[in-house]
Length: 267
Image 1 (cartoon, rainbow, N blue to C red):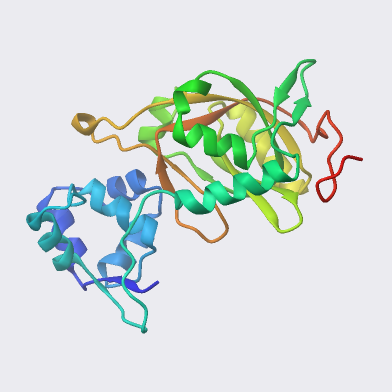
Image 2: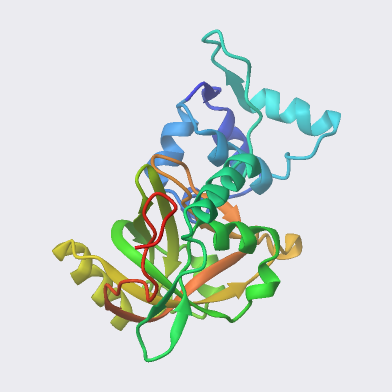
């Protein structure tokens, strides 16, 4: 993590803005301990740093914002040029992964879990949602995989998916689309019953299929709402997203309705 906070700079900024450490951690989707580490001069991942910048409204490309960012962090030079903090997966990389999924004939699969075939969320559909999320608002989709990670739903996100605070959980489901092609899907539960099911499935390690609906909630600067924090790949910091997939039902893992092509050939 070549970006590092200057010792004490984040604490000074946070106090100047009148932000409690627990509130800041909740908005960023990280622990208060992680914030304290950053305040002591710890390293920070590129995407999380971009989220910090947006939270403190120093993300724009003007001289004042640039000066304030320079007062907050510095780049540890290991012979590599500084990478600008960003909030989303590089579009080029996601597009390449989606294209690979299409080339393998795996982009239009469906899964039947409740008696009706549902589109299986994968790299290509995620790419489509990322660029035009309103096309899939309230659409019921299927997500299959093993539970890779789970953590609490930050309070602002809980309000936007109508989840009682503390009842829901944020879950990352991992699915191997093909050899060397992994898909990480972040979904949210909003009921205690679904959260209990997720906990049990996490303990057993068995793959599951969940039916989800997309909730769209774009940034609202006046309410300090910047989006849902989701995970996009292994060892990445969460990135801001204007939509979330909310769990409607949970089943044992279902196989795709269509046969999965191997090396671009069916059967």
